[in-house]
Image 1 (tube, one colour):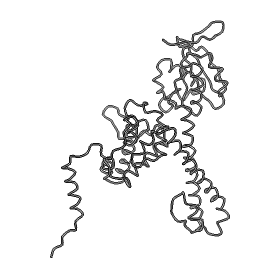
Image 2 (tube, helix red, strand yellow):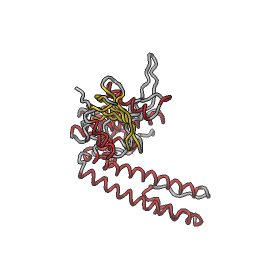
Image 3 (cartoon, helix red, strand yellow):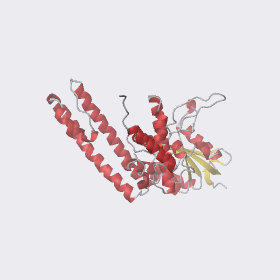
Image 4 (cartoon, rainbow, N blue to C red):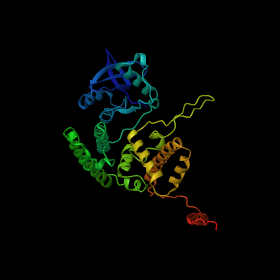
Length: 376
């Protein structure tokens, strides 16, 4: 049975059963509905924890809907502390108000009407705990620093190239120490501040890397098991654990690939079922990390059933290799969740071949290494 809150509407008292909250950076508009679907009240509240907590006192026990966004995490926690039942809508799947009548008041009412009928129509998402949000900030800041470093490195290379010179290739970690001596003398006054900034960014990235290793060991020991997979490092393992939020989030490990947007999009209608790219919903940074790990598995990674499966898919040109990378990344997303759930370590060949097949394979490999006899 739904809990209700009672508010004054003119001289009458109304039972509120649903509230929609359209979140803004400074002000958030709200709309409350009575049991029969009539608007019980409208208003706006400052987008601060104190103001929202005061407003939420009259919504205790009521279902409140808001869209996912920059403020939705802390707002959800404030509303839940006030006794509200919070539903966070997924804006990439919930359509909301029609475009020709879209405004803050209408968006708030649309959220309220939808959550009153069926919260599942909002494709609700689950926010991670505040501590996880703080730890994930370490990874987000590092990613932004790496992105800035790449931009500065490309700026330095382009500036030197425009005058007919070229800086040597190499890792961005050692760009400052290995390329400064190759910068033409006339350009050094202009590029010196950029190189100093790159040196400072490298120090900050190294410090955040140490922080990631510390967090993995102290707060998230389950990452050790995930790093048993070739190509999965501390950064990817911790990002995976913090982004997913909990091993019980999915009923099946196969859902992890779809959660990260690594499954094909579908647009089937009647006899028409076109072949489309991947959905790309979910966390784009974690998805990019898994694709990088798939590169490692297929190129430099040790022999495994996963590598053999991916290499078999990659035959047939560039397009086939791109598909194989996405497929291996999806397999990694499923595999990591499986290891996390079962507590097992990675096995290169989970279903070993019979001994006779293994011996025959070794003999064939040995014969292939023997020199070919030449005719007399």
